[in-house]
Length: 384
Ligand SMILES: *Cc1c(COP(=O)(O)O)cnc(C)c1O
Image 1 (cartoon, rainbow, N blue to C red):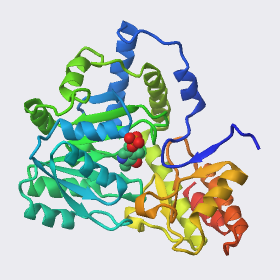
Image 2: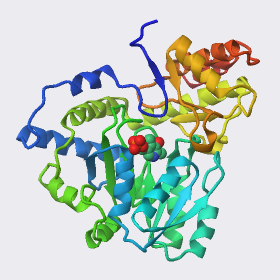
Image 3: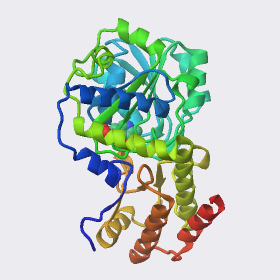
Image 4: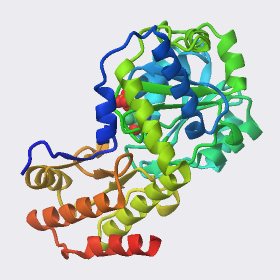
């Protein structure tokens, strides 16, 4: 086995295309040089279609959570109230960030594996008309649920003046996002999931409505003050030293994404989702999310005691050099999650499914070798 040929099928960080790896190894350049400014401004501009916005996209140096925190500290004040729609571990993170800054977080929680629906949100907002912001997670990475953001935005717009702030860290660049058309106020994401880069960049776009709030608000943090980023972007730069090498990589990523085109990228992810789900069903492995809300980027499987998810993951790593993810929080040790986003193709999905079948066989789980692969192949063939 080649020890450097690790097959990463977790929902972030994701594999990095060789072209991108190469682009990131360019010699360092001055971050205040004309060359970097031109590249930075152009790269930020090129992110807009992936957000579905004509607004500027801001690039910060930080992990995805810094983007979530930016969404909170620029729009709210201690004592303000917010609604947080929680369908798993990452929804809860928004609530915790709010509370750290003294914002009162009203949690609308659904059981893990379920999506937040417009009906639930409508009823919740009627009870809490005072909220100034509603936070949601587009793809809830911990459960493999993709929340219906367009519908939620419509409901929130109809029943409230609150800003709608969306964590799209584990799906932007792989799924549709029409921020302007849907009426989402802030969309945030990070570099290490569908954007095929190492961790370290956070992206954020804000609507005109959101900017009115941000401009009038006293930011609760220094580094994450969006007004500073806005002032700098007008001069094609950032207030603090940008992650220059990651920007080199991002420019290359955008070449790759633009070459395939967003509609084809979206279709590829849906296909990989459908292949994975068909395979797991054929193997009698329970899926956490129902079809209507299944994430295009990550599939969460709950064996419900039929076999040991951790034993499966161990064999996959040891025998096949494949890493899949386990569960988070109360699902730790109970479930497994297969990432299929970014630099990942349908044939890669066949590979991970095949390895899962063999590993299941090796841990003594009842499995018909080839059943999952066959089901996935059938989905793939029907598609081409
Ligand atoms: C990965 C992820 C984040 C960000 O996590 P970091 O570790 O800070 O990059 C936030 N939200 C979701 C839904 C995620 O999947």
